[in-house]
Image (cartoon, rainbow, N blue to C red; front, side):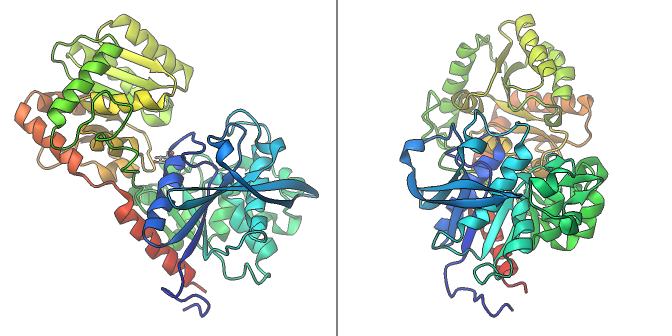
Length: 483
Ligand code: GLC
């Protein structure tokens, strides 16, 4: 038992470090988690705060309050860091400002991302000198904050304020590791020769590997993914290392923000509904969706998809079966953007099947909600899916998901063809299996009473953070008590 930390004595203090968080900046699911897990923790009496970069196109910029500024060492240089804050839903958000690094269009994808997030990670620790908040745990997320535990151990551990802080590193997607040439380590990251082995892997600087070495715990976003990444098919080269660190690895399924995703109050959908009147509500939303995409209203089921158009999401499978599904009388609505081969294919598919297929290339949050509400079933055949949130949102809107059994999809969706499930699942990464699962969904749709029960069952599923926030609290307690 750590003599400095007493459970229940004080509020547990968590600093949640992330490169994006709703409602301020979002490029993917990480932002949803960073926006909703701290909120659930606060509701449970934890003092959880979020720290993130102050991007040029951050939302609600005018609502931020300036706190102070200081210098942050980045390699041999010192860089300005401004500190701003805001409060949303009882959660304090800190924003780190440096216009050279963050006043750009978009969040990532710049030649100097390694340097930008080395700065950010170092600045997270420096900030603790200027705020009246010493966390028990810093929960870092993905490669952008992976250097926080590395720097903590190398440069701050000996200081009173820092010597009891523990770290949890959460993997949202192991595909993105923060890999660079080793030449950036000394000059840019400020990690000298003697310590470079901590972040070196396979001849590269690998930020995520540094976090695996130095964080007290490693978590990922579903129990199944925690197993999968020990296998080379999923690990992007890190399985051997993770097997070595398995003693400190676990998976906790994400939840979704039940208030922000509620068909009873959602302002983006044409008709609000709940579990009590979903038949009427979904029928109206479906009609509006069909009108919007010019689809025939002939009683066909509409299968929807909302996703980044990249290989990992299983678009190659959908591409193989799309014409077959349309021929079987299924209408498709697809929203997303990404790799041009898929953008082109689905635009062309739409042109080839007027009245049967609707494609929207781009990301448009309001339209996504219209699809969750208006579609009859939701397709998500990912090759790999650490957790996935869309399948949970689809259930909340009464839209049974058709998923491949991987990662969080396997942990949240259970096949209903044989009994009591909340969707349709298939195991192998094959177009045939996806096609078959879609056929099962279509057959089920044609049996009105069974379909009603399935939709009802989906809407009953509890994907709120209530359960998972408790698992995080347990993990934080355990971590805080480590020596
Ligand atoms: C990443 C993963 C996704 C997960 C999300 C939030 O975007 O790809 O599966 O749901 O992070 O953890």
